[in-house]
Image (tube, rainbow, N blue to C red; front, top):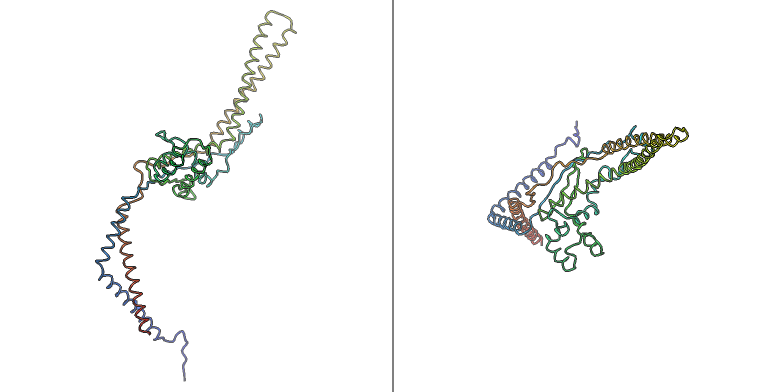
Length: 358
C-alpha cells in the first residue's frame, strides 16, 4: 500500500544543499575580501593617516564654533481672583485674570525666536557699549566688507531706511535658521533650554543672556498687562479722592473756625455739610486703598516666574575636537580607500565575466 507524505513534511535535500552552498559562498567571499584588504593594509593605513591629518588641519584653520546654553524654568502665576476681584468690581474695575494668553504653553518658544525680540537685542548695547549687531558684523569678515562697502557699518541703533531693514532682516533670518535653538527638555516639564552657536565667544554668551532677559521682561509685561492697567486706574482714582478729601478737610476746618463766632444754627449748616463730605470721602478713600492693595497682591500672584536654572560660563563649549576630528578622518579615509578599491575589483570581475560569455 502506497503512503503519501504531505508536501510540508517531505524532505528537501536540494534546498538544504543550496542553502549550504550559499553560506559557503558568502564565507568564501568574506575571506577573499579580508585577504584582499590585509594585502593592502599599508595603503589603508596611509590613506587613513592622510585624511585624519588633513581633518585635524582643517579644524586648526577654521574658526572655532562656540555654543552657549541657558536653561530656565517657567512657572505660571495663579489665575482667578474670587472675592478679591469682587471687591474691586464694586468700583467698576476688574482685577481678575491676566493678559497675554496667546503666549501660553509652547508659544513662548516661538516668541524667543521672533524677529521682534532678536532684532531688539541686536540693536541694544552689550556690556562693552557696542551694539550686538555691530559686534556680529565686526566678527564676520565677509559680512563686514560687504556692509562697509554699502555704508551700513557701523549700524545705527534705529532702523530708518529700507536697506537697513533688509540687512538686519537677513542677519535675523540667519540667526533663526542656523544659530538659535529653543526647545523643552521634556513635554511634561516646564524646563526650557536655549542654545546659541557662533564663532565669537563674547557675542555668543552676551547675546544668549540678553535674549533671555528681554524675553522674560516682555513675557511678564504682556501677561500682567490687564492687571497692571487696573492697578493704574485704581491708583489714579485714589489720588483723585485724596485731593478731594484734603480740600474737604480744609473747608471743614475753615467753617468750624467761623462757627466759633456765632450762635445761630443756620450759620452752622455749611460746617455740617463739610463734615458729612469729609466722612463720605474718608470712607470712600479707605475702600479704594483696600482694593488697591488687594489688586497689587493679586497681580503679584498672577505674575509668571521665569527662574534661570543654568547660564553659560566661560570658557564656552567648543564644538570642534581635534582628537575626534582625527579619528573620524582616519576612519573615513580607510573606508573611502576600501570602497574605491572594492568598486574597481567589482568592475574588473564584471568585465572578465562579460568577456568569457562572448
